[in-house]
Amino acid sequence: MAEGFNWEKAHPHLFAAQPDAGAAVFFSRSTRDYYGQTHQDYTLDYHLACGALVEAAVDFEVVTSIPAAGRWPVLVLGCAVCLSAEEVAGLETYLRNGGTVVAFGPTGLRDPRAVPVQHPWLEQYGIRMQVEEPERVPSFPPYVQQPGLPARCAGFLHGVQIEPAGWVEVEAGAGRLHWSPGRLQTEAGALGLGVRVNSLLPEKNPRIVQSPPGWALRRFKDSRHTYLFGLPKTVVSVPHPTIMNAFTKEPIVERIETTRLGEESLVVAFDRLPASVRIFSPDLPASREMQWDETMTGKPGKIDLTGIRRFFIIQIPGR
Image 1 (cartoon, one colour):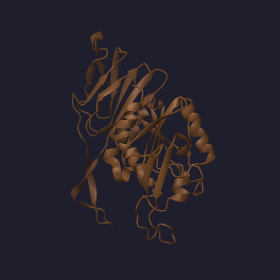
Image 2 (tube, one colour):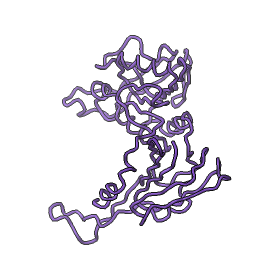
Image 3 (spheres, one colour):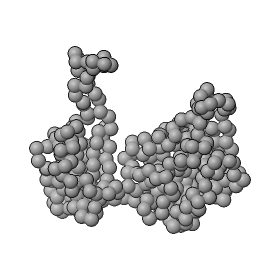
Image 4 (cartoon, one colour):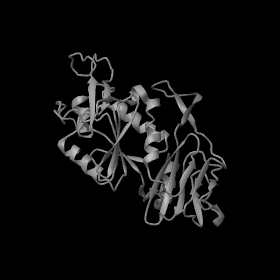
């Protein structure tokens, strides 16, 4: 751990950039606090949505208020049952200004205190929802003795029923609204959330043709550079065969193992070809420079990650 902090201290310029995410995921505090009694009511779908975007290599940030459309072109709402009047107005402004909203599950059926509203937000777009709530047992705390089942949602567009994992798309001002009655905890594979969001994002330079298997990429930028940060998705702790914690009697971690990278792990394509890119990693004795000639513009090119096993940053001139 000390090695990691010392490496960051030695390369401060690499950590001053800001996230360059194309999507935002809305976390509904009112749904969690006033509607949610169990993990299945709301937070499980939220967690699964974030996981689906990570698996689809979608850069995203979490927001707790409705953002402006210019900051993030795609906004994801997962089972946000409770929406305030201010949040509904924010969504309308976001769509009117050209943003794309991708929502799924029961959405906007209740106010911030979980009181059912007379006209849910989606009704103005011809979408009607029927929600079957699970039986809830009176208890304290409220999550005790609950069945842990999600509310089931059915959807209709202008009176025509939508498939459980189907999607509808409607115009909303200058923007687009995508909605599905499905929930990730019940229709995850069929819903295809990550693929859908990825298809709606504008392409960036460089375009990721192939991500390192078992690794997650995050994009950052400053006034001069774009950065690709890479971290392993899974880290395996290998216990020591004999040394134990004196109090818990659990084995001490001897080492960690990750997916090793190679020469063909990362493939990118540049619309605007930089003169070179530079690869930084605590696993390398020094930063590594890579160059391409002009004939590689727009064509897939391999970035050599040989020797890296824990973490890397690729610095690319230009934004």
